[in-house]
Length: 233
Image 1 (cartoon, rainbow, N blue to C red):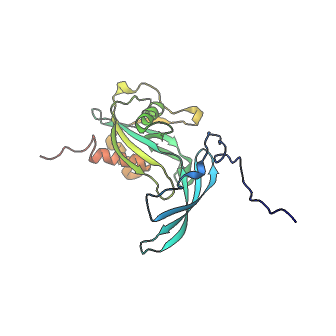
Image 2 (image 1 turned 30 degrees about the vertical axis):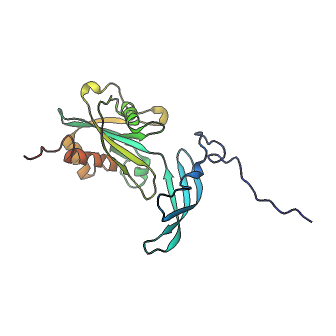
């Protein structure tokens, strides 16, 4: 009589049972147990990639509007949440932006991959205010004063979990206390641009600026922010 085969228990899975290269475990737990929407029941979460960020394939039951339930699968890219800021100088009529190489844009049709953007970065372990002050110092070399929280937005909700916190802040030439440029050890090579606001807005209109978060902040600045026309009496 042979012994009955026992289930195979896989252990020592980086990011699941043991820390991955960033010290993370339990990466397969995201979404399990969610009950805020009674029309969604998560059945399984599979890690398909555990690099610097995390790609998951989730199987869930979804109740359609007509009441029928169906099983669906979605892949989600989890890179954490982030923050972005538009520093502005009303007295001189300009804003601080960056230019850097973005491979995803380059491979998807952008002529050279060099995108003009508002400074941004991941929160990591910081709150949004602290994170954007850190990124402004690293990327722009500017020390920000009072922050205005503009809005929070999911920038690509069909596949990316990231929620981006949008800010604006005044600055003066005296606030440019560093060289900026980003962190070389992180592969950053960022050019700092001081651009007249009217020119930046024109760049968003004619396609020289194609970054969504930057266009959103420039439009806010023109319509409701520091460069908005005075309200009529």
